[in-house]
Length: 221
Image 1: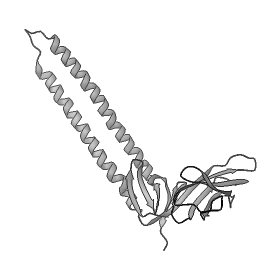
Image 2 (image 1 turned 90 degrees about the vertical axis):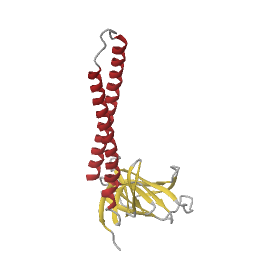
Image 3 (image 1 turned 45 degrees about the vertical axis):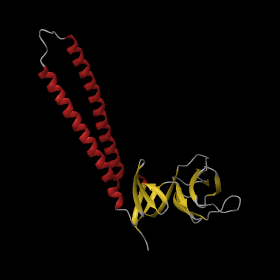
Image 4 (image 1 turned 45 degrees about the horizontal axis):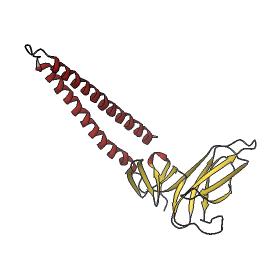
């Protein structure tokens, strides 16, 4: 999708700038070492012409300043282009490939997907410490996407507290071969924020990465 392309282009540009900085630093250090050696070993009666290395020094400083300018410009681009397109999703209903939701009222909703018809499939829900709090047989074993709602009940019969909970799916076909599965969350985008992990969308209390969005539609009233 477009967002993924933007991330790839940004990473490539950043890599180019960083590589240029490293190469320039290495060349600059080498130049200074050679210059120091020449100054130490120059003929006192015939000192070397300073115009040449002065010009090289000025040229290197110019390249260094240009790379620093490019780096600053790229930082500004990252900050604006990352959240910019995502802001347009505020108020939209989205689906994102993410297995984790934030539960505040004891109710959790996911969509699980089977890449083929399954003979058996199990849904497991774990808490933030990766402890299984609920497990059941998948209610629909046919190929495709299926909505799943959880009322927050635990295996011990209690109710979960507020926090992050993750749905995982394991499925096998009639030959006991594993079937690929995916898990999605959905909700209305209420906000956008930048982080070290990239642009994040707020779906109420749940947060998903912008690049994981797989479906967008107008929110229903």
